[in-house]
Length: 156
Image (cartoon, rainbow, N blue to C red; front, side):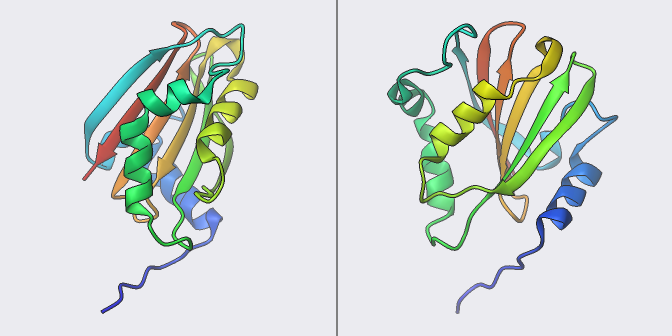
């Protein structure tokens, strides 16, 4: 039997994320999905492109990239992306939401977006990939204070 999925508008998903994962408009609480099952921290140079050679990121983030591809084998199934800039570590600047196109170079899309649209005043830039049923999430956080890219995976 084929499993059917409910597909909602991006407005629905945005409202769901705001209501269930955002506390006091500062950052996002992904432990509400489940526990953190994996993470990695990569040093970056904020004065140059974050990853001039994408192969380094693909090697370091292979577990996360493979996980997303395993979860979405059918081309019509696409996870959500959600981007927040946490300005001055105090207030969320909600940047956008969309469906991640797994047929494209989506890793480069994430890194480029983190690199060119950073949070003001040295805040964190967060790019979260969500399952549309919110059973898992992978968070890419560019921390300007300590020049790192933190990648975390949460799962029910």
